[in-house]
Image: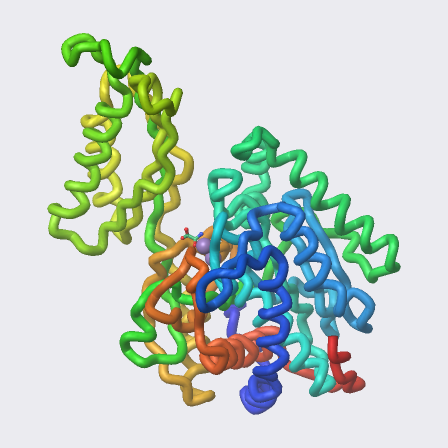
Length: 446
Ligand code: HGY
Ligand code: MN
Ligand code: MN
């Protein structure tokens, strides 16, 4: 069966797209940003790490308006992924899925991930306003721990959903305070289930990992400079570049900073700095500006101003569309590693390409809605990365102001966010169609 065999009517999809309400979308995004808001930056900084109290509160806040609305149910799976299900006319059919993540970097922006979830929920409000019931159900997913900054690796929720056998290894991962992912996951599941029981929410009883999904379309901010530089409204994403994360441990021997002569020093800091310098020089001098190499975290012990370091642990995030370029980084890591050093691979995801039919539907949406657009590669990874190996998958990007992301200044003009949401609405309405009318129910002004 071809994905596009049964798409809904383009004219109706057009109506759904134009029922997207910019003010309502912004209100939801601003309300979400209040969960973990940090008063810095132009767009509004947010500190809402995976499965933190702020994120659990944000999950409850987002689903609550739909939890008692006719035709909706809420669910959570064993990876603590949250779903808002909009029932379809044929509720046994596998759902069209959209969504993203609402966890942020330790100090991130208000749109990374949040935009894709808010856009999906805005499509629900648009369908409700028109009183339309789609043939297939539609799910908005809030994937657990996309960022990987609190618990490494990233994409834990969407990887566990698409490859359930991977969950066990994630459960034992600990954050900086020593709390394991399993405990945070259990608390998140209990928190949402408890709220559902307390308030009598309509609940999705059956949300196993790897349940069938008809297709997945994710809206996200670009987090880079391309769309804004070219003055375009939407990016039709064709692929996500490969990413590898390494944790490198360099050992030394602590000793007195003042009395230990150079010849008898075993200085972990000096050795780690030399290795880091070799990696950064490679990135700067290899002549390939598609290579992205970042040393993001650097911890040393004992961390005293007048004691030679006996241990340094630092991370490397390497990205490139071609595996050979990432292999070259790995080779350099192995050759530059000082004796006694250790390399752990925290994440290794090859480049994924999206479903061609779905990518062309995304372009069709932009043409139908007269949105300026281009095809592009994603420099950032997203939950669509594991979904791409599980079901037909595509992404839509909204521009990022000055290409800034993973920073409090992350921002996008709301009209651009609304335009991308209209393209998403058009795609979802067609993919979950054909649409049938039902009783219009104006979404309550939540
Ligand atoms: O790191 C990434 O690419 C994503 O934004 N978490
Ligand atoms: Mn993201
Ligand atoms: Mn991110």
